[in-house]
Structures are given as C-alpha cells and as structure tokens.
Length: 510
Image (tube, rainbow, N blue to C red):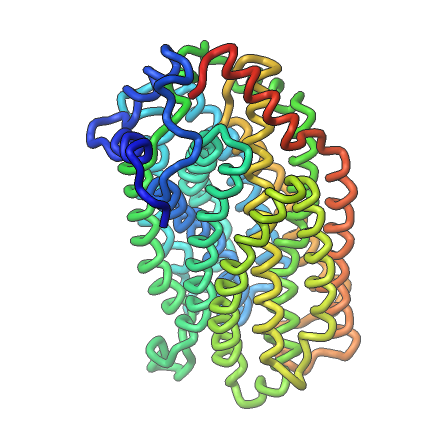
C-alpha cells in the first residue's frame, strides 16, 4: 500500500466525495487555475484499487460466457463447433458496434453524475442481471430452438455489457496524465482481472458438479450449473460497477465539458486519423486472433484429445472442470506475478520494447501447446494455462496504457479529448479480430479437422493432429504479425514528456 500523504488525502477526498459528479470541483479548479491546484498525477492506491475492481464486470461480462459456451453448448446440448463459433462471432460484432456507439455517447454526455458514471452504473446492473439468462435452454428443446436461443440471447446481451465496458475503459484512460503511472493503473486492474479469472475456470468445474445431475436421465445438467455460476458472477459485476461510480473520479470532465460535442462520424474520422492509435488498433486486432482462437481450440484439444481415454468412463467433463479450476488458479498466480516485470520493462526500456518482449514470450508460450497438451500428462494443461496468464497480463498492462498515450497525442493534434471513442474503437478492432478467430476456429474444426462431437474421444488421429496444429500455429503467426506492426509505433517516453509539457502549457495541468 502507498504511504498516505497530505496530497494523497486531498486527491482522495475529491475522488471519494459523496456528491455527484465526484471530483468535479477539483477538476474545474485545475482547469481554471493551471498546475497549482491540479490533483497529483501519482494516484493513491485506494483509487487505483477502486478502478481496478471494475475489471470484474469486464472479465465476467465477456469471458465467462465464452469459456462456458463450448463445454455447455457442445458437450451438453450437442451443437456443432460451427454453430457455436458463429454465435460467438455474431456476439462480438454486436458488441463491437454497440461499443462504438456507447463510447461516443459517453464522450458527449454532460450530466450532474459525469459522462462515464451513468453508463457504468446502468451497464453493470443490466448485464449482471441478464448474465444467467444466457444458459436458459433445456435439453427438451430441439437443436434449432437451442441454437436460435443461444444466438438471440447472446446478441441482445452484447449492448448491455458494451455500455458498461466502453465507459469503464474510457475512465481508465483519463485517470492520470503520467506516462508510467498509466502502466501502474493497468497493473492494478490486471491483478484484479487475473484473480477474477479463477471464477471463470471454477465456473466450468461448478457446472459439472453432481449437484446439477438430472434425476430423470442421471446426466449432469451443465446448463443449470452454468446459470448458477452466472448468478454469483452477475452480483459481483453489479458491485464492481457501484464501486467505480462511487469512488473513481473523472479527471478530465471539466476539460471535456468545454468541448463542443461532435457527431459520431466526425468523432470516428478524427480518431482513425491518429497514426499511433492506428498502429495500436492493428496490433490489438492481430493479437486478438490468437487470444480468441485458442479458447475453442484449447477446449477441443484438451477435452477431446488430452482426456480422450476418460470418455469411456464418462468422467472427461468432470476432469476437464478440475483442470480448468486449477488452471484458473495458476493463471491468476502467474498473471499477478507478471505485473511487476511488465511495469519494470516499461520503466527500463519503454512501452514499445516491453510489449515486443511480451509478444516474443507469447510466441513461445503458444508454441509450447504441442508438447504440453498430451494424454500422457494431462496436468501440463494447467502449467500451460499459467504461461498464458503471464503473457496476457503483460500485454494488457502495457497496451491500454499506450492507448492512453495516444489520447494525449490526439489532444495535442486536434485539441479534443475522446477517451470513449478511442477505447471503443480499440475494443472494436480487438473484437473484430476475435470474431474472425471465432469463425475461423469453428469452420476449421468442422471442415479441416473432421471433428465430430458424437465420437467423443474416438476422433481419427488426423483430426487430433489438425486440432493441435491449428491450436499452436494460428497464435504464432498472429503474434509475429503483431510484433512486426509494433515497430511502426512512434511514441517514446521522451516524446510523451514533451507532449504533456506542451498540453499543460496550453490548458494547465489536469
């Protein structure tokens, strides 16, 4: 914990004030009076932890569903990989476009509660309440009904979580103007998100417990188990939204309030003309492909190949749940352990070099699946999950803080602050990449591998070979492309210091 100081206490009292919008009095003084009364760029730990708690809704609202979709809808409801992949893609596309809309809306909103908080509060509440409904189908329905419900419910859910996430990511981008402190903020968020990741792995384990056994068939109803996990997760999402609304300041509200609101098309045009941000969009798009491709491919490689001998005894699903639970725990441990090295790399070598090293580690980690996903040693799946957590944390500490830097570049260039547009555009690109990966993974499983769910662990050797080759190969290629794109990123620590000095000379410190 950081040592309390008088300066921290003043900043905290602003951030923790009960009246809405929180912190606006301090921010207005900073804008009007210059650097003298500006809150410190180094944030007190309690504000960083409060903001980081919002990562709970981000992680659970997006990734709990995607981690449960294949085990529940493939293994229990027997939908094909293509059907599940198409639903995921449609969900991500809806999420991406809704995110752009809500990012723009949060930029132009002016209210007594601020411009981000209304969306954070309502979005966390609605998405938390709706999350369990994603697993409502019953085995008594026919497959077309199950597929139709899966598609419709997931697409309708997307705007709910997008309204939260666009405002939440924008809030993080405006918390501090300091180059290194931005990476620290994302480090706090990464710790929370990796800890919450245990719940995602635990949800698969929970959905396979005998508690949810159907008395009529004797089979475990993993759909009901998934709903139970989503009820708990939904409550946590709502709580995290309330914490952000109550305790996190909107630092740039007064600056943004003086700007004339512009239309969504003009906002996007200006945002997409920012060169450093375009590089980050391309890197995020490229990295999103392995991030999302490995989820379904990892499930089929693990559940059907690594545990192929357990399908005869009907214990494969339970064992996969155990591996996911322990994998989630190790993912958290390794993810938290990666925060300090990532921040050290940023301080020592700058953000571009740090992210390059992280991507190289990712290439090695993804390639290791060929050795670690083996029936001879199923527990190596857990070890590999830990490696993935280490890589993912490093990337999501550095990349969002680089996005915040590009916001300062854009303000110097155009005079406008558009955190919502930048955050939503970035996640539009990553979700578009994930959508492509989802379609690719589903089509590849059906068309290239010859996979058939009804065969269980008795797939042809050629099928297993292709699943493993795609699981290792797609991420390696995508990460290599991201590594090449990163060489085009122009913002160094020294350049960001000059940009910050120029901005503060124009409008005072914020």
